[in-house]
Image (cartoon, rainbow, N blue to C red; front, side):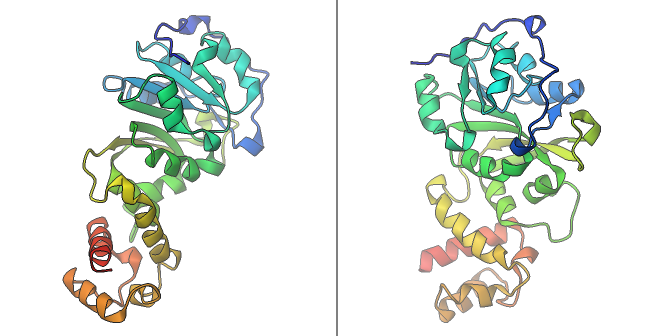
Length: 282
């Protein structure tokens, strides 16, 4: 059984392999900004009982996380990174695998962290960031997350730029399960190689009692995807394919909305109310 070592080597013993270049296919952009790294790695340090870092790469976040006296584990797909990581992490603190193929519940149980408050932190690969996020949302063992996204994706999760009609299926899902905060915006020059776009770090703290329970995740996601696949179309026209017309008329009256309204014009509470009422009736 794997056990996390809570006494990792000191950061001074870590030697970054500068010869390792970013792999475009893996969406790698190595964070180099130490201020951002320190900000991210302090986010939930006083609350977490176990830390999982996804895609540590050269270890700019890892070297700070390893200083906390908290059980710590990393998941890294790129086997080129194993040598630098092994200079200050034990072998049983490293899982070399594709995060999308890792059963997080099984890993957490294997680590002996069942029932602990798990914090996931990552400078996510931009090309699969949403897939990873949804995987993390569905794991109720994960209580906290500190995640770096491409700014455009971050705006679909949390409206920190006051966009008009910002609501999306992804935003609604995240608002349902987490208290969200913008931790910081990150300039392209904070990475090597620099991406073409700005980034943003979002802090997630899971609600103990979300509006829609986690066991309804698939049902809620399907409902929202249907609405937002054609977000500029009238909701009545979209939903009549799945619900009787009289049910829709009554449900929209109950939430004081019109069937001619569009999904993007609704706020979180209205979308959740629509989902709950339709589920209750049908």
